Image 1: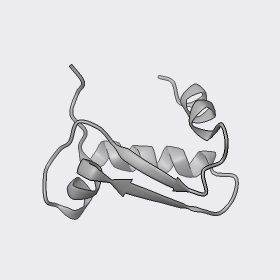
Image 2 (image 1 turned 90 degrees about the vertical axis):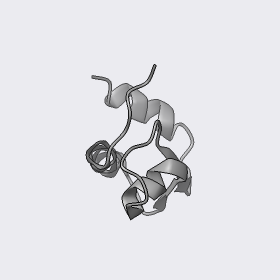
Image 3 (image 1 turned 180 degrees about the vertical axis):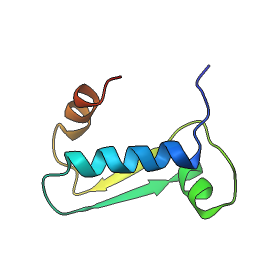
Length: 68
């Protein structure tokens, strides 16, 4: 079972994504993550995001550089 995600975890993700960014673009939070950030709920089970533009290989590289 996955642990729940709260606003603090989303903020940490935002910081990590910002560190990895190498150009301009937008990151959109969708689903439960957006509801959490708006204040409609206190947690969610995952963070759905959409990158515009999505750099090829970004998620694979991001995963490698942010393993804990």
